[in-house]
Image (cartoon, rainbow over all chains, first blue to last red):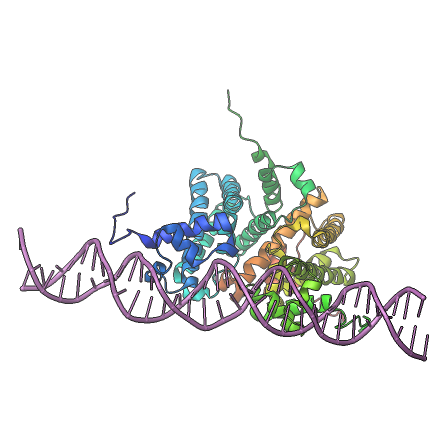
Length: 213
Length: 213
DNA sequence: TGTACATCAGTGAACGCGCGTTCACTGATGTAC
DNA sequence: TGTACATCAGTGAACGCGCGTTCACTGATGTAC
């Protein structure tokens, strides 16, 4: 809406990135092709070359956009629960889960190495670092609140991110035992998993705080 | 060696699975094709159809083999350190890391959903469950030794596996900050990460116990 | 304001390629008598 | 032991397809005077 119409199409570059996300949700990672993305955006299949040097560059842009969405979802959760580090941890992780579950193939292309030479795509690397910095920020708040162990916050952040990323990946790959998924809701299972790395009991957070009369 | 030569080729089915692993290590997941696998095994590109109904079935077999290798590496570690649950945890996790780092694309195809309809490949599902059962076994031993928190062992196992799987995935995708990788060896970083979920200090394990004089 | 020109986003034909899959076949092995 | 037949693993030509990329082009927009 806010974007000014440019030459012919308007902002084709971003339209292609959005079309890429659409294709991913419809046809998956293996169904993502330059030609389909162009068609989805309503241009000829060679038009993307005016904005991306090759397919890899388009994939890198789509992946960077995936990281941006993930970052923004976590940041929104962190902002909403500012001052409550335990809740920031839970809701940030929950945002991660939701992104992966609802945009599975966008999540996969972003975090499963479709970008082959990361170094060539500084915007992608920047988004990745920005996300890790956000995780570290939440982790530091949790450490101060004694929700997480003391220690170098980047090290603790690697543990926290590994736990969440592993959980989400296993969910997405359908590797979590169904007897567990029958027993717990996905959200409760996430909280019970986070609880294993926490220094305090997080399980009360499984239930929304009741209104005080 | 032990396998009896069959009709023409001999055990082509397994030869194709091994050839698949070779192709993965050379050309990666995106470079894996039926035709290359057949060529690598020294047969015409239609020969695989005598053993696999289609490409998906071959990929499922290669993935199942990947799970088998992973299982066996962890099982070997568990057996070597029988009676020392903390060490079983560390060395089992280390075996996981080593498999992923040395056979990256075999690891990826196995655990990053190349098998689209798992249900259609019961051998794959069986290997997956067998691996999870092994993790649970180690987790239970750790719980009895108070190395891990008490609680339902399948739930704790999900946490442990998530932590390890996430760590390994992030390493493989080059998402772990290089300042951390400069500070610690991969093995020490793994142990420091496991340490966050453990109820005892695992860090002494980072250094081989010195001989007592 | 009007004309001439430069820019450059987007077009469409064409390319060569590797792919998965089919099909009629070949030829080595195993089995029946 | 020898012949006739059945089995079936592996062959090779052929198919149609979607792909990434190139290239000469068109035509709308922006700029100079």
